[in-house]
Length: 168
Image (tube, rainbow, N blue to C red; front, side):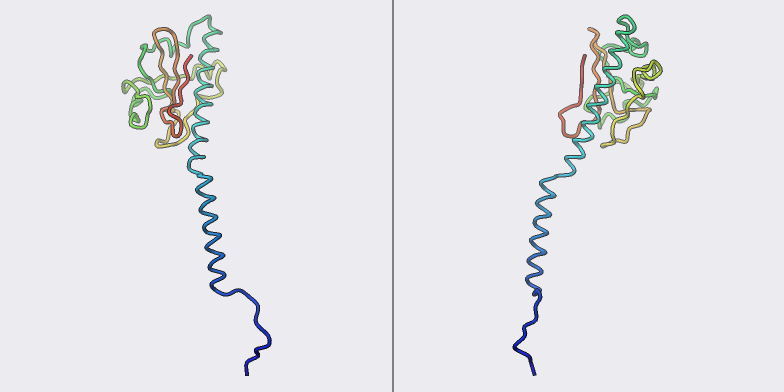
């Protein structure tokens, strides 16, 4: 009735479950080791570093080309106050909760389109989206002009870096 001479080949259910469990454990370990969220944050911070460096370089080259005088939008700023870079004229402190550097007042906005018009920047950069979605009106970058003539450009958000800030 039963053929006992020929065994059927194949895998048992328990063998398949063990293999699936091992693959799942390896996948979980690889996912944790790669940590994609941290990599995305690092990439956004890298873009912010590139942007703040480009803006500060454009400001300084413009200053050199104009005999030591800053762009008129920067010259008009109150020393020591923090300004949001962008095209808006009000509401520049609306996202202070997400900013490493708190914009001093609602109307503390500075428009650097003059650097674009003069060819120092292709466009005014906009910070990558983090906790806030930034726009040309409020770019997510701040500018501080000191009384000694130093300029500080800082990203509002920094995710894995302590802060994204350059000074010259």
